[in-house]
Figure 1 (cartoon, helix red, strand yellow):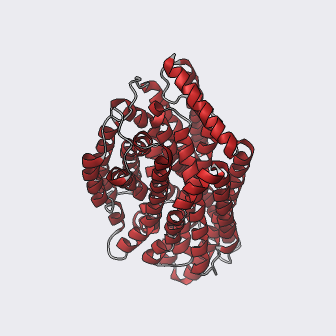
Figure 2 (tube, one colour):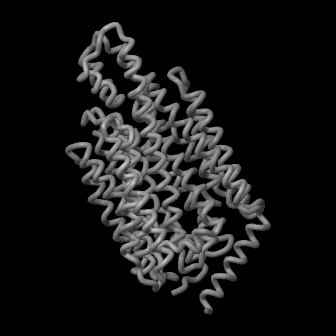
Figure 3 (cartoon, one colour):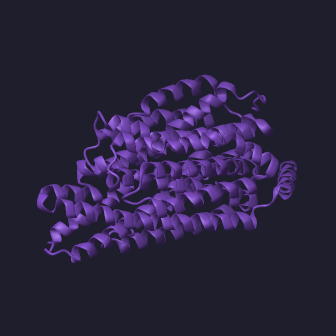
Length: 519
């Protein structure tokens, strides 16, 4: 069934609410990480896994579940995902240890993988032209803004409740999304009748999960063989996945469309932009609390300029795409994010004032707001309507695979830099440090803080060393962010077409797709 090209109205509100359940869940854990670390005496590796668990579950399942939604019914899959997100939130809130908490976060990500892919697919199916661009701009900016609101909401809750309360915050939002989705989202709009290739779906899950978990365990002492084995599994699964997509009649991920330069450059751009957003918030929340010593409420409020920046340029981004083209708008967004990472690397120190962090987050928000719209719009425009689910799944991967991979990379660099610096500082201490104590000190900042409480005579030295170690690890992460953004900008400049050529390419894609249908 083809829906009438209606005004945005309540269907868009409903889809944004559905997306908000996933977007808010992406970031609510970050502010609570220091409290979780203290509650469970968790290692930095466990904290990294808790932080990326939701993104991991969503990124690993989104291709498969997005395709199932295209075939079985997007609205039904969306509603099922919202329903399943409720027990996942409750399990996370009341987890007895850090590993069950990480598992609950992954479960919540899988539930979001059922709901989130349908939002952009339905936007693409319901609206066209300028309305679609505006809808995507609002969907992208408000979704990103809600992600940035997560730390504030979490910080406020942690002032009065236990760490688990942050995982319950999405419950009322899920109920509202369920009601709005049932009432206003149309069913069976331009869905695909092609069968879903289940082996490809399973390969996609293995490929993403092995990659993210492998990166996360890479800096763990003695775990290098495990990390190498997981990355080897990633390579094998990726090769088998690509081989299968080229050979079967109805591929899960059609490489004919993915190879179009407007599509693959937009996908890579989104992975870097949204991955940088999630990774910088992940490091930033720990920096604000561990190094600057802010309360959870204050630390949660500091990223608010991210939301303001993203929402402020949402309309401008859509206009720039129409007037100057996606390439120009993407490069402008990347320039903002490059400046933000340079500010993190040079300004975020122990003596940093909060205003410097606020300005940095505002610049980053402008970058995400400018780049998010053309990245999502290009994906939707480069595929035919019946492949809207593929474009939507890729848009989700931009956020979730980017977030999972870059948080894993940033977390690994933070872990390695923290442990190496603390080991070096301990070797220069006047008193020798036992192996057991050293293990606790290098485990994570939270573990070092707990150790400092046990040895009050050395508390000041331990906390000072922990802050310096954290900053050194964080600086490695910020430097990696600069490299990612520069490489992404070079790819956009070299391969994404200028405005006139972009319009010509999209027109050619439309003609090619029409020929395939008629043949």
